[in-house]
Amino acid sequence: MENSVKLIINAIPNKENMQEVQSYLGNMMPVISKNGGSVVNRYKTIDHLVGENGPEMVVIFEFQNAQSIKTMMESEGFTNLAESRAKAFTKLNMMICGEM
Image (cartoon, rainbow, N blue to C red; front, side, top):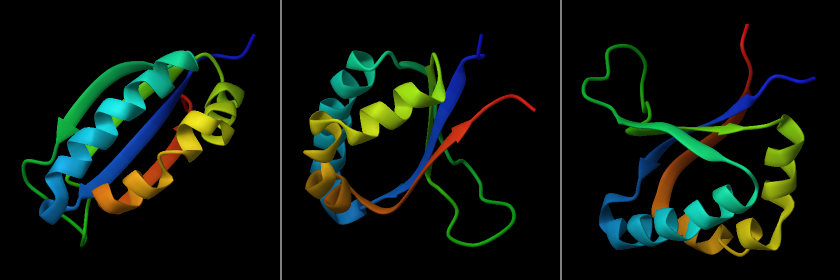
C-alpha cells in the first residue's frame, strides 16, 4: 500500500489583491477536502536567509496518494479557480512530495 503523500504549496501572494487571496483560499479548501486532502499546517516566512524571491507562504496538505492530488487538479472545482489563482498570487508552486 502506498504511503500518504504531501501536496506542498509555496507562494508569493499578490499584495495588491489580498481580497482575492482570501477568496481563493476559502474556495480552494472545499476542493481539497472533497478530494481527500487535509491541512497538515500553514506557514508564513519570517526571515528569508538564502536565495531570491522565496515564498512568503507555505501550506502542506496530506492526501492518501499522488493520484488523488492529480485527480483534484484535473477536477472542475480546481480548474474553475484558475483565474482567481492567477490574480491571487504573483508566484505559486505546487509539488507532490513523499518521504525520503
